[in-house]
Image (tube, rainbow, N blue to C red):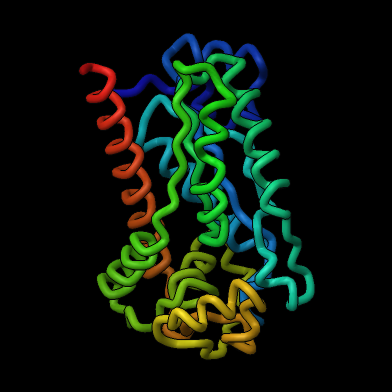
Amino acid sequence: MAVAAPSDQLRLELMSFPDVATALENGYSTILIPCGAVEQHGPHLPLCMDADHAEALAEKLAKKLGHTLIAPTIKLGCSAHHLAFPGTVSLRAETFEAVCLDCCTSLARHGFKRILLFSGHIGNFPSFKDMLPRLRQAVPPDVMIDAFSDSLGWIERWRCAVEAAGGDPNAVGGHADIAETSLMMVIRPESVRPDRFEIGHVGALSEEQLRSMWANGIKSVTANGILGNPVGSTQRIGKQCLDAITDLLADAFRDIASAQSARSDR
């Protein structure tokens, strides 16, 4: 059983520097970097959805992995395709990479040996894929950096979780849908506006629609900014989705660690 961090605190920003040093000495050499976004989520959810989601996942994931701390959440992400909606704040890909890079090099300097990035905003996944080789080159060879970027696997887990909790898996579209709305009913329930629920684009986006979304913004495929349908959202579905993605991330990071260990043993 993992030894608890000082005062059972896992969030780096709430610890003192002696607490961090003690945690490292006690084997807490893995750290999560949660990433999110501040962007529109339809008329019924707040802009903080993705950042809130990342922080909620981080708490559960750190405990599941064991001997793992949580770095401050990078709340802004790559959201250019949402800029047609007021309030969205987007980082350029190179800015997002620079912030991730500085976080990783800082953490590596202090002795963290495994740095894991994940995002509550699927729109950050392409940037993760692109930047990961450069992040790895920027730290010493004994420091491992990994990032989760399987968007299809993420959406599929949501569909299975929604169905298992009694919801309609076809209402999952990936943005302000039944999964994300249910999650916010758990994470920040007072922020959800059921009186504003609207159906968005339902069904998988075609290749042409995907190209249009990235080139012309999400408004080109859904006028209200919703991919999927929030109707039928419940806290039960939200809890199921939170657990499902925690398991997905934990399994993915463990598989990567096992593969790296097998290569190093050869």
